[in-house]
Amino acid sequence: MTSSPADTPDTSLDQTPAAASEHLHIAVVGAGKAGTAVARSLLDAGYRVSLSASGDPQALALMAGIITPGAEPKWTRDAVADTDLVILALPLHRLHLVDPALLEGKVVVDAMNYWPPVDGDIPGFAAKDLGSSEVVQEMLPGAAVVKTFNHTGYSTLEPDRRPAGHPERLGLAVAGNQQDAVALVSAVVHRIGYDPVPVASLAGTLFLQPGGSAFGARLTAAQLKELALVAVPAI
Ligand SMILES: NC(=O)c1ccc[n+]([C@@H]2O[C@H](COP(=O)([O-])OP(=O)(O)OC[C@H]3O[C@@H](n4cnc5c(N)ncnc54)[C@H](OP(=O)(O)O)[C@@H]3O)[C@@H](O)[C@H]2O)c1
Image (tube, rainbow, N blue to C red; front, side, top):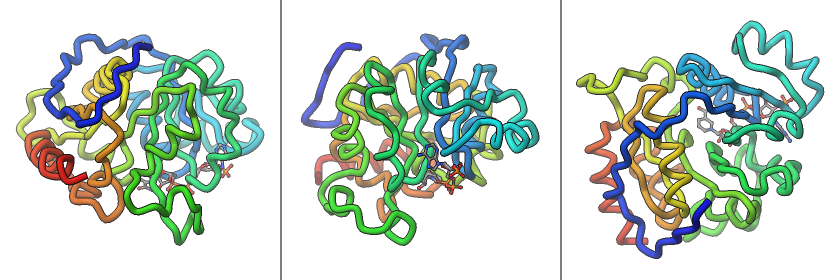
């Protein structure tokens, strides 16, 4: 991975999703509402998917066979071991239970949000001027953290998917400090049925999280880009 930190988020990086790797093996950590919706979308797009929850994969297998058929239930350690991309979809207050060493050198999607009613008061995340994915990146220094999927609802992720060029196709922001990681995840987002809106920094992504202008807003890529351009300079 090459590092290209940007002080000013660049929303003009319209990557060509053709670089997308249809052969990626992707791990989804967290098999709840968000994780299973993401996993099904990835499976539909043809990706190989490993899925983990907090415990024994045998306990997950029955549920996974019914609601994410095709996903491979594993211990988190095994799920992430041989994957190219890891998607974190567990409650944020449980993230400290995932060993950062497992994620060294990997592209890691942060699909999580900080919800105090669920997560409690976590001092690092409670800071109002720092995006939650910036804190996640600090917790996972060896990973290239990319923020996406967090600003959409689990119940709309699948029904809102549309093929490229469809007039109703929506956008998903894809924010990260490392351009190649953003490009990789943008390609995946494109492939599952959304127009990626790349944002070249985690700084300034408050607009994507709870209380932000784009959170839960079901927007086209053009609308999302407008919000990004308004939100980012103010950060
Ligand atoms: N719900 C949404 O619409 C939505 C949309 C976007 C983003 N998000 C975010 O996604 C995250 C998950 O939300 P959710 O609604 O999907 O929660 P959820 O339905 O409660 O599911 C949480 C999942 O995380 C697993 N988990 C807990 N601790 C774990 C650990 N240490 N290692 C691996 N997996 C672990 C749980 O497994 P066990 O059951 O085995 O404990 C469960 O499968 C949250 O940060 C949320 O803000 C949610």
